[in-house]
Figure (cartoon, rainbow over the protein chains, first blue to last red):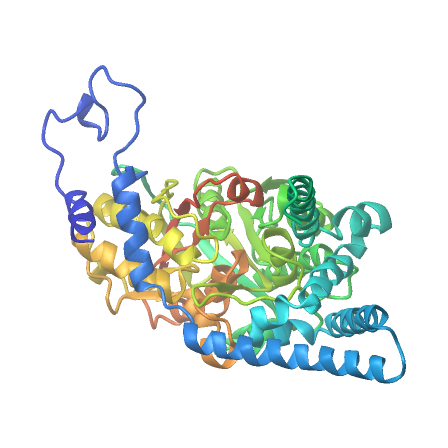
Length: 191
Length: 336
C-alpha cells in the first residue's frame, strides 16, 4: 500500500531535461513502443492498487447476510416440506409427492418473478432464495420476460438459458462423470 | 492566447456559449435530491415504447427537442449533433435522433460521453464549422442492466460499491453567443488502466482516469484546485471519490472540499437504495443541465471543471478476462 502510494507520488515529479526522447515521457531511446509510464500500471502496482481498493470498498456484513440467507432458505424449505407432507397425506407415493413439491415451488417462483416480487426476496435473502429450486426457476423466467421483445425464436428461444445454461450443462456433465465413476467402482466390485 | 495548451489541453479563444440545456429523467431520479430541478419527468419507464432501447431513444429525442426549443429563435439553427449512449452500436442514439433530420457524429465514451460531446461541439463552433451544435446523451436503467448485467427480473444482490444507472437524457445547445455560461477550455482524457477487473466497482476503475485528467488539466493550465468553485466528476460514486481524493492528494492536489460527484448528487443512497451512487451517460449530463449549469448561469459559481467519467468495458472484454480501464474528459465551464 505504502509503496503504491509512493509510486503515485513519483508521477508528480517534474521531467528532467534530456529525459527520454525529445523530452517526452515514457520514450526510451531505441526501445519499443511509446507508452506513457502512467497509463497502465505494472503487475506489482496493479496488485497493490487492487488491495488498496479492497481496503476502501465497503462490503455487506457477512454474518448478517448469512443469517438472512439461513432464514430465507429455511422458510422456502419449510414450505417445500409442507407441500411434501400434504402430498403424502392425500395418498401420493414419495417420488410423486417430491415431484409435486418441486413443481409447486417452481410455479410459485415463476409467478413471483413475473410480479417482480422474487427479485426483492432474493435481494434480502441472497443465496437463501437463489440456491433452492426457486432460484433456478427465477433464472429461467427472468430472461424469458426480458428477451421476449426480441422474438420467440431469437429472443426467448436463444436466450432463455443465458443464466441457467451453465448450471444445466455442468450439472449434467458432473452427473455423467459421477455415473462413470459409479460404473467403474461397480466393475471393480466396490459396490 | 494559445489554443493548444500543455500536454493535452485546449483553450478556446472565443469560448462557445452553452445557450440552453434540457434534462429529461425517469421516476426514480425525480424522487432524488435533485428531483425538482429537472425539466421533464417520465413516470413510465417504457416512455410509451415497446422496449427499453426504444424508451431510451425516446428520452434522447425529447431532450434534444426541448433543448432546441429552449434555445429559442434568437439562436442560429443547430447544424450538427454530437451524441452517444451506452448501448451496442449506439442504437439509442441512432434511433433517437433520426427524426431530428440533422447530421450526426456518433460518440462512445461510456459514461463520459457528454464531456466528449461538449468539447467536440465547442471545437466545432469555435472552429467556425457551425454556428450552433447540439451535444446530447442518454442512458436507461433497463437497457443498461440488460446489456451489461442481468435481466431486470433476475434476483440477486448488488455489492455496496455498485452504482445505479440513471434513466434520462441531457441535451445542450452550443453557439457563439447567448446564455450565461461558456466552455473556455477542455482536457480530453486518456484511457487509464490500473488493472481492476471488478465491473461492480466502477468507481475504483474510473478514479485513476479522473485523477489523470484532472491533474493533467491543472498542470496544463498552471492552475490549482482553488481556481475552481468545484471540480465535478461524473459517476465515481462514494468509493471512487475516496480513491480520487487519495490519488490526487499524492500527486500534490488537494481536492477535498472542491470535489463533487454527479453520481453522489443525483440519488440519496440510503432512501433510494442506490449504494455507491448514480452512473450512466445521463448521470453527469442531467446533473449538469439541472443543477450545475443554473448555478453558473446565476453567477453563484464562476468556474467549474466538469469531468464526466467512463468505464470502458463490454461483456465480451469482461468475459475474456480483460480489466476495466477508465476514461475522463474535463470541460471548463465559466459564468459569463
